[in-house]
Structures are given as C-alpha cells and as structure tokens.
Amino acid sequence: EAEAEAEAEAERARADAAERRRLKERAAKGLRKARGRLRALCKESRLCEEEEWEKLCGNATAERSDQLETLCAGLERDLAGPEPLAAAQARLREALAAVDAATEAEATPPTGGEPAAAAAPPGGGGGEPLAQALAGVLSEQQLAESERQILADKAAKGAAAVESAAASLASHDETVARSRAEFDGHAATSAELQAKLAASRPRAEALEAEAARLGEEQRAAAAKLEEGVAARSGGSMNERLRALMEAKRSGSIPGLVGRLGSLGSIAPEYDCAISTACGPLDWIVVRDTAAAQQSVELLRERGLGVATFVVLDKQAHLEKRMAPIETPKGSRRLFDLVQCTDPAHRVAFYFALHDTLVCGDKKLASDVAMGGAKRWRVVTTDGVVINPSGTMEGGGKPLRGRMGGAQSEGLSEAELAKLRKQIDALGSKLDAVKAERAAAQSEARELQKEAKRAQTVHNKQAMQLEAAAAQRAALEKRLDSARAASQPSEAEVARLAELAKEIKALGKRVGEGEKKVGAADATLASLQEQVLAVGGIKLRAQKSKVETLGEQVSGLQQAVTKAEVGLESKTAAQAKLEASLSKQQAAAEGLERQGGGLQEGLK
Image (cartoon, rainbow, N blue to C red; front, side, top):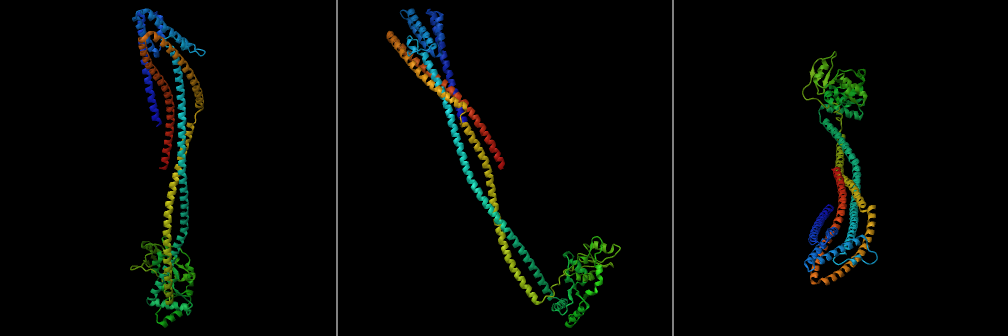
C-alpha cells in the first residue's frame, strides 16, 4: 500500500508540474506578444524614446502581460481620437509613473500606517507588487504547513505501525501460552504413561519366568510319568528291574545300586553313540558280591529270569586307567563325556566302555581306528561302531535313550498316581499364569501405544514452540523497528519547532500584507472611479473588459501558485515516502529470509 500511495503521489506531482509549465509558457507567450505590440505602436507614432518603452517592457513580468495589453489598447484608442498624440503621450507618462512608483515601493517598504499603493496613479497597477509579495508569503506559509503536515502524518503512521506490531506480539504470546499449557499437560501424561509402562515390565517378566518354570516342571513330570508307565508295561527286563528296585527301597538288598545307564548322563549329541557302543547300560550295579547273590536269589524265587551284575568292589583295579589319555585328532574318549552324580560309579562306566573313542563321521572314525600305530574301538555320533579287529557294526534304526532313560522304571503305582496329581496341579497353575501373562502383555502393549502417541504429540508441540520462539523474536524486532521509526529524529523535532515559529511569523506577515493590499486596492479603486467618471460609458466598457481579463489572469496566477506550492510539498513528501518505502522493503526482505530459514529447519 505504501508503494502504491507513493506512486500515486508522484504521478500527481508530475501532473502538477506539467500544468505549471503550461501556465508559465502561456504567460510568457502573452508577454512576448504584448511587448512586440507596444514596441510597434511606439515606433510608428513616435510616442516616446526607445529607452522609455524599453523601461516599460523590461519591468514587465509574465504575470503583468495583461497590463501591457490594456496599455496598448488605450494608446490605440487615444491615437484614434481627436487629439491622438497628446492623449496617448499622457497615458504613456502615467504608465511610466506607475512603473517608477511600483519599483520604488518594492525597493523601500513604507513606514508608518500609510500604504505605498495610495500614491499610485490611476491605471498603473500600484497594488500589484504588494499582492505579489503577499502571494509569496502565502506560498511560504502553505509550504511550511505542508511540511509540518507531512511530519505529523509520518508520526501518525508510525504510531499505527507500533500499535499493530504490539497487537500481533500480544496475540502471539496468548497463543504460545495456550500451547505451553497443552505442552506441559502432554508432558505430564507422557511421563505418567512411561512410569506405568516401566512398572508393568517387571511384572510381565516375572510372569514369563514363572510360566517357563512351571512348563519345564510339567514337562519333566510328564516325561517321568511316561517312562514309569512304559516301564511297568514293558517286558521281563523291566519286571526284573522293578522287582530289584522295590527290594532296594524296602531295604532287603541294601547293596543294590541300580541300572548302570541310570547312574549317569551324557550330552544329547552323544546319546546315540553311547546307546550303541555301551551294551552293559542295562546291567545292574551292586556294591559287593553279597548284594549280587541276594539279587540273583530274588530273581530265582520270583521266576523273573537272569540278570548281569557289575560288582563295584571287584573293579578297583580299573581306577588307575580312568585318568585322561591322549586321543587322535578329531576324536574324544567316550568315558570322559559321561557325567555321574556319584564319582564312585565312574569305574562301572569305565568297565563298560574302556577306551572307546567317539568321532563325528564314519571316514574320520575309520582313519582313527585303523590309521595309526595303535588300533582303537571307535563309534560315530550316528551309531556306527568300528572294532580294533577291523569289523564294523551298524545299520538299522539307531539306538537312543538308553543313557539315563530308565531311572523311573522302578516307580510304584502310588508314585505314578502322585506324579499324575502333580502334573494336573502344574497344568492348572500354568494356565492361570499364562492367562495373567496374556493380560499383562495386552496392557503393556496398550500402554506402549498410548505412550508413543503422547510422545509424538509432545515432540510436535516442542517443535511448534521452538518455531514460535523464532517467530516471537521476529515480531519483537518488528515492534522495535516500528518504535524506532515512529520516534521523530532530533532533526525532525528541531524542524517542527522551526516550522511552528515560521508559520507563526508568516501568519503575522500575511495579516500585515493583507492590510496593505486592502488599502492599496481601495485607493486604486477610488482612482479608477475618478478615471471612469471622466471617460464615460466607453471607458467603463473598456474597464469591464480589462477587469474580466484581470480576473482570468488572476485565476491563472493562483492556479500557478497553487501548483508550485503543491509540487514542492509533494516533491518533499515523495522523497520521504521513497525513503520510508526503501526501509520497509529492506525490513520485509529480512523477514522473508528469516521465514525461509525457519521453514528449512522444520523440514
């Protein structure tokens, strides 16, 4: 808007300047025409010397061309009358006297209360210099008032700009305050959700661990029950083992230890190898010969067939061979892989295995068994046995589960019933724990979703507040700029004071000038009435024409004066508006750069 207003002001100033030039050219053209007419008239009639008409023409200005025209018309009428030369010379002398009086009045202002125009002769226009002087003072007064109005308008616009910037900043602060309250509320909500989520994790983990423990206990009990049931429903060997184990539990055979395979354990990857290579795993281990004899007698009495026994006190000579040995590369001694709960039972496993080695595949087992200086008994992890003699055993379904698999074969019916109850109780507990775990996990997922949504909103509001802080800095800068621009400079304050004094002084001068012009006009009117009384109707008609032309010239003079004053005022206003526009454009470019930087940061 400021740019458009400045452009409109400049256009109006250019139009006024063009009008002013046109009026000046018209007045100058009239002056040249009047001068030429007067010169030709004087030369033809020999009314005066060349110096006299030169004096008339030289002192005439463009604004007084109508007076020269009136003088020429009067001289022509006089020359056409009964006494042409004398009357024309008299009129010419009056005009020269009027010029002299006007020149003297402009050079020396009158003192006292009598206006200088009162002494002007008729037809000489003695009030014209005073009117011109008054017009000059009025022009100065209008120019000063225009300049003061420009400064006042600038102050008003600056105040409006400050008010607008302050309102924008206040509105921004209110919006930020509401956003800050929402931000704090979301922060509290997010923190509360995070605390609930953190509290739910240990509970969920504890339920998960409890469910895993109960599941493992249930599986172990189920496996033990399955083995016990299978043992009770098996063949004669299981019956023999069950009878012997019942005798052990009753205390009738205290030296009975148990089935060899049930006295130790081995890693699952070697289960097939030991189940294939160790045939005595189903033998019965006893501490001494007496326990072996008691067991044989029990089997004979009950008709349960025969069993093979390993007597521990008869295998003591093997203990020195149980120490670790160096094995070929890629192989391990199978005995070293057996884990026993009681170290005293290890000799029974050495008795059954001796230095049998285990390898990962058949080719390596063959190389180990037959490729070295010493031949070894080797078994592969998939159950192929290579004997030192070179024979190989294998094929069919691989054996598994003989190691540690018959520990429950001696369970009684009461023990099996107890296992069933234990399994049912563990299942009920596991179901309850799983249901509670599922509820805790569902609650944790919901809390996690809510916490994520709250955190997203929180982060978005944080970014908005950061952008608002940058925007507030820009608004503060705008307010400071508006305040600085609204404050008048020292030069403007001084100029306002000077203008006030000038306008006051010019007003006084205008009043005095108007009094002088009024007095001169009154005297001139009196003289003109006297001339008209002497000249009769013909002179009055000529006077009416002259007055009409004078009014037209006066109107043109006023238009020219007004155009000059307006042009000067608008030129000054245009300069100030252009300076203000440049400043505003620079501020707008700065704000645009700041806005671009903020947008790049948000992206």
